[in-house]
Length: 628
Image 1 (cartoon, rainbow, N blue to C red):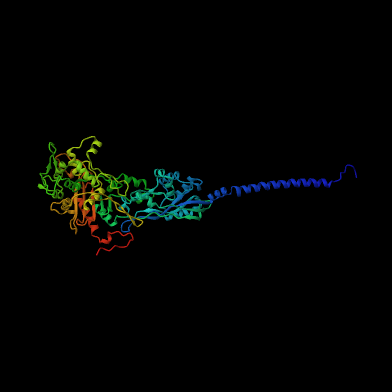
Image 2: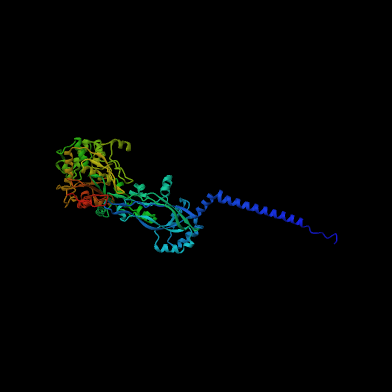
């Protein structure tokens, strides 16, 4: 064997192999250690974080809207209901391309520019992963088209929800009111607690009882955790906390009486308010013309709102609550009582009425509505029955505004009644201080002559006139008017807010005069009691809308319809045991006794012709048998 031939050394090869193997094992061990450390970091150290992130992709926490409380009339008639409606919603986080999705949806269902604009506004104030309404009240055909194309519309779904529905439409719009979608101004004014309360719902009370009792009607929101797939579709409900429904309201309002009052006004502009004289409960509350509140529930169209808002008849205006009218001669019984109590007149006091009146050292002639006058010896009874202006001008000249103002304030004029409806106006009964503060002028004797006839600066709402009339009926008990009778079947307490002190003799004198309005030969309100089996006490009123020059005669034909006098009438019945008081105004109706009195008659007749068990409320829903 040559020297160049090297002998193979197995020991060296084994050592080299072992070294290489050791390096390989150490490398693998190191890599396994890194992997184990990473697994430990993921599965142990950051387990809660990554589980939470995973659950956020798979599990969503959703608010569950409560069922809004129902509203019933005194007889259990449903005035505000909740009805199922299908809404097309979109979750922005689930949608890759919003514009393309909206375009596709627009080809499947009717989607106009107004819908898209409202959706864009809602999108700006939404919460993360909140479903934003895109279209309300889907039809069955539209639901079917969305369902068939569901795979092409990630993030888009059809949700069933309960929306408010008003079965009687315009009949109770000005009392019950309506709900509407929460707007940006309302949302920005919410406290954090309110934000949580409205999770899951898009509606809030806007007007009427829906607004004033919003906190009770809303209920308490619930929550649920749901498992979703990659497209955001709900697979199952994992956990749920049920919402609490809103409270149910039972009202003093009576549907049949409300309908009778509305029918009596017909297509005329005006208002009717009827109250229970003992409790102050509002039995009828009508303002005409009215509107359909269902238009506002899911968002009124621009065209519909424009038509309502621009109508000359002002259907959105609540005349019964916010209409401030010169009350005219409807104030005469109240002021007559005040004059008796102040000692400026007695039941036997008479004046000569030649058809006009003049203040001392004043050339102005104040003309009575009856140009020939009411006679040579007119007492209070005749002055009320025939609405003699001269008698009350003479009283005002001797009494002055201070006494008249004090009496009016006692009967609730010039201030809000405190009814449980929002937006009430206060009206006005002027005083010396008011005129000097408002106009910087002193009080003149002629101002008192205007005030005693419910003209000049005197303003009152139909609600105030009804409350005043109820106080006359109860001989001084002034009750706070109230629309809601019971909450959740529990009757609410009534509240007496004042008492007018007067002698029994003076009450008798004034109430007899109010009866004479209806039953005397020359009474101005005979149409209020015609053919009724019970006695009615009332007072007519006619209030000027535009001034008439001194000495000029009122010419209805020469005036535009909207510039003619308002017709008013107040009444209560039965006289011997009063139950109901009514105030009526017919705008530009001219004759209180001829036009407004028949409306009052229909309301009184409807209420008092019923059996007792139909007008007595029982929270259990069971009938109440008549006495005896």
